Length: 341
Image (cartoon, rainbow, N blue to C red; front, side):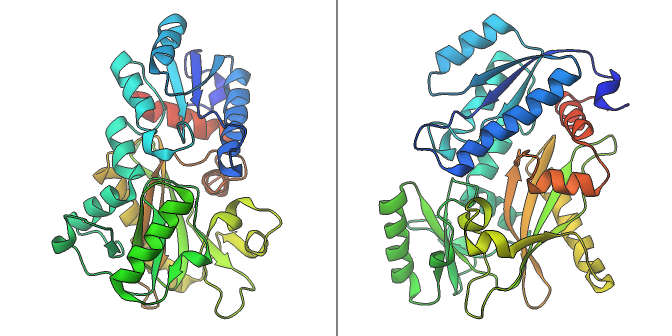
């Protein structure tokens, strides 16, 4: 198909359904509106009628809005509901109920990937490499590898590296220490937390875009930790992503340049990313995050359905590296979501 502006897709009435950051929202939530602005401009440039609707817990209001507007398509940019990622599956669930087509992953895929523990259990059951983990009262404890130290304490539901920093690393202490650190995070930040074996080594983001021939892996990106002093944990935490005045923000760099010796590793991560796409039945677009240990073995950290589409985010950086303009990316997301190939 031709580029988005060339008129290959019929002009549509599109609703952009999005998170609604509150007054006390963090920079990660505010970034949703940057995505909304970018997608709105693009769709309006091609002649679509675009209506922006914030998504709240008032589901009756959402249903009424959709029945009144009767959109041809909904671009789903809901990344949090009332400030939590635990409820993001309710947006696609309502659209499924109304039988309105929408962008990106379906309800089941959103549930399975937004809950990091469920995603890890699926990965482990499918014999895909993911670090061992610990969660209090986890009934699957007998069926998973025992967690190894050092560990990193992470939110079960929240993405955008919320609550993730070098203080999240637990060097030793056993399960009692993990329980204490998990309890501290729950009391200070709310929500559910778990511990995962921390993979010392390199970090990669692998972006995947739907296409005519199936999922296409875009140029792979390594997050490089330039100038980190000895002993400072190399993690892409909240400061590295969102706090422009921080050391981490200025010394964590995305790179698409690799030596020939990395070719087998990049090929393996590409294949694993496609396996994740198929395992979780993703569509439209996704990103799979990896750590690579000192033995050059890749480990799947997270599977991100509907990753950030801000102009400066990693997904669009990978698309640009592949020679894909923003308009073509949006077109392919819509096509894959609608099943046009």
